[in-house]
Length: 163
Image (cartoon, rainbow, N blue to C red; front, side):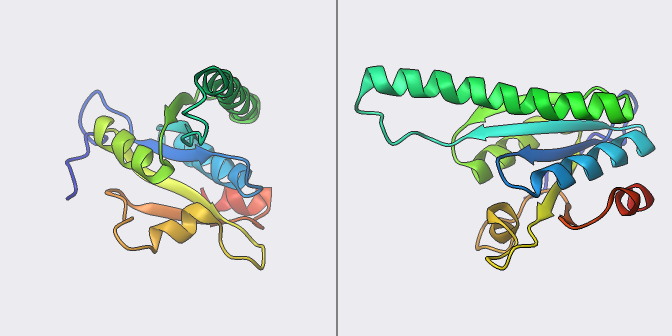
């Protein structure tokens, strides 16, 4: 079910959602989404999802691991946010969630009706396009907004001309 997007209504700005993770292609998705946001007067949203821990039965260990994961998430978001600010002069929205990545993407899209496009980047590796891009083709993983998939090997010039 597709819920109504508010990004075209007065007082709302179209948001481009991209996922921050440790994949090499992540940087390309952020670069494209930020340029699209700047060129269209929109906003780029950077989402970092902390996957559930396998150490939930060890309370003390789980608490430390969770704190470390949150610190790593914030550090990764800060790194990408700084790049966006310095290269394009726009302020991204930063979001940290805990849970399964696809579930958290769906939940954020439903909660923020200004999110109009999900931007992912495809890996150029022989192993495949990457876990998120592979998931959009999976059963029941379709997202309720259009998905733009950016090839990892696009140059800065290519990104600029396409965005």
